[in-house]
Image 1 (tube, rainbow, N blue to C red):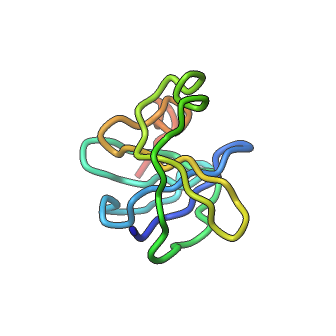
Image 2 (cartoon, rainbow, N blue to C red):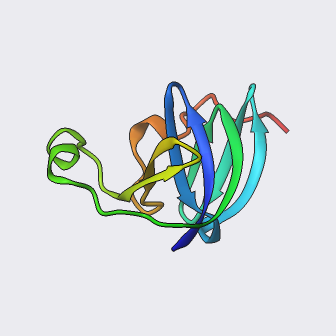
Length: 102
């Protein structure tokens, strides 16, 4: 069981271990989430879910999902892909030009 930060990027919901998050900041209408070695970008942070059961990725999802991930979870009826913070999917990576100018 793990505490997850719940994110939405596009039409996909994601989970990220709360313990892996080191910071949040606004980014051009989105939210930048800092984890060790990377900045992820989400359209919305939906909140934190406590003590979520993460299940291993099944054969069918593994076959079609090309990125490493911790597993999958279901929170309040929302299916999530739980991100491996050491190998985040392209959909969540910040790109040059996304950063706020301070």
